[in-house]
Image (cartoon, rainbow, N blue to C red):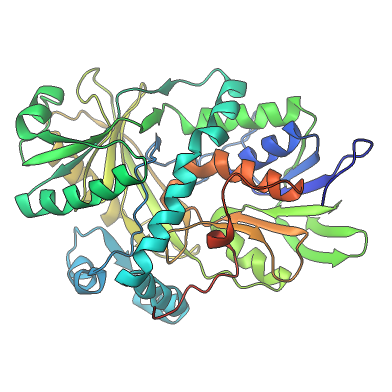
Length: 427
């Protein structure tokens, strides 16, 4: 796949979220001719509000090396589903469609699988800034709040003990983690309700103050470097002798290579290629509150509640929960109420509700993204399935995809992230 100096590799990228835009910009930096296909890219005059990259927790989190499918999750799922304020909901009529995902999810929770998953995710986290920093420097006008870190909070000594064991593994993988006593936390976050016994601060985590503005900056630099956007939904994909053809509205885009980074829509797109990605759709939510300066100083999370409360310059944002609801349902107002109630219990002085949001997140059963070539056509490369780590892993994913397409040695071994990996196995 190496390209000689006298020609440009033509690449079509389906998806204008943070992963697709990061991939497009990395490819342009390496001299490719890039077309981005997306119905609502973050261009001037185009609303970006429905994108998953709009409504996340606004944090880059190298601490996120543990899969959602943890040992013992099978025991905990029933109670999660029965609690109206639990961190997980699903629609029972979707159970047949969810079955392959749920089966692979339970397989990923086996202790025999955990070490490999954690090691693979850690390999990405170690080179995170090799992917992010060059793009952030190029965008330049977005506020990145570094140096404060994020804090995980524990409600019981048993939970703290389990977390200390997890943090030993994090430190072994190069993730800095420092235990905080209750007094430490009270001094750092005086407005936090005292429902904790301790916590951990991860100094390497940082805030992107406006993920939307960051994505708009990425898109602007794609154009500056000569890339173009086709504002349409990707349709039929056909592999031909002269390249890969993508129907995009009234236009047919023909490129030598294709990258599928369409987030939650990537599963349906993979079927048109002849692949079947085992991924499903989480509906992510956020509730934003008017910001009072100094009310909270770090991104904060209770592990058992599975959402972050993040201080941004324009709002304080509560983002999270898992709602396995697919792409065809309206927002569930009860999930927004749960988020708001828990956020106010966490920080009683929170101000007026400013905004609410729901978007679609591409979720894999083992919490690892799909990065690598299609089994049907190696000219097609997948870069999707990042779940809650899209903002964190967007830059390094783009760098890895550019290395694959340029025939370079990849910065890390991408074999564990293969789109055709076996997601269901007993050992």
